[in-house]
Image (cartoon, rainbow, N blue to C red; front, side):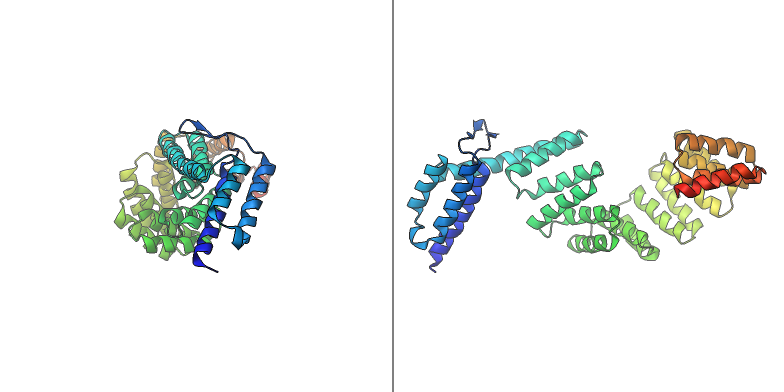
Length: 357
């Protein structure tokens, strides 16, 4: 087959795709409305006609092709190309507006605009990427994963999409797959602290805490972020290195002093070291910032270790009042009631904890 004919046939397939995307769209682009002339049957017939022309080498001259397209759609070939260009430009506008609304914190409007950008130009990898971010924020992880995969189909080396995809796979519990994407993201950009941190989190989920700590250390070298110290502390705590974990939590608190998650985990580390008074002090510090059911449950456990059972019972009841589906609170209540000699009530609390586990 002549190379010119091959190129010409390829162009016909491209134009066929444009025709399908443009006819009857009814969208307004730069103030110009694309009129909804042909119906679905016409669109299908036009596409079939283009493929038929492409298959017939002797009839695939451009003049005959353009005449056929005009007869079927009412658009000249140049008009179709121009409208395709306008669609691409409009896609960029929707994308930029989506970014603006994302900055303003309006995720619903932002998602809508990114979706419109994709509708106009599904090769807009950045629109797919940010659509993934918005969906992830709404905890629609499967949809977010699909968006990142679309972005990566367009650009397999899209480093930020690889990082975010790895993070989503982690949230979905697909840790080994997540690690593959994060390794590639780091290979593409070794200075991405987010990718190193995400890798550390995945390794931690896989109980590879020593390797996780190495990843968190690399993230910390690149960016002095409190979350990285916190995550490193958690891995150290998992290795029962409580004193070292506390040191990392302290570093995190220097940067984020009102974070109850950091304070709570620090209190847990002191608890494991049997430094109950210090654990109670930190727990109370956190509760001054926010009354939280997990903190209250932990405080009740600390008070029980200090044999302050009546106060511990009041605290754990408040924890259950805030969240009656949190099994550690019911387990702590059972332990406290048992210590108070209220065995039947203790067994009921243990049964409830077991039910929720």
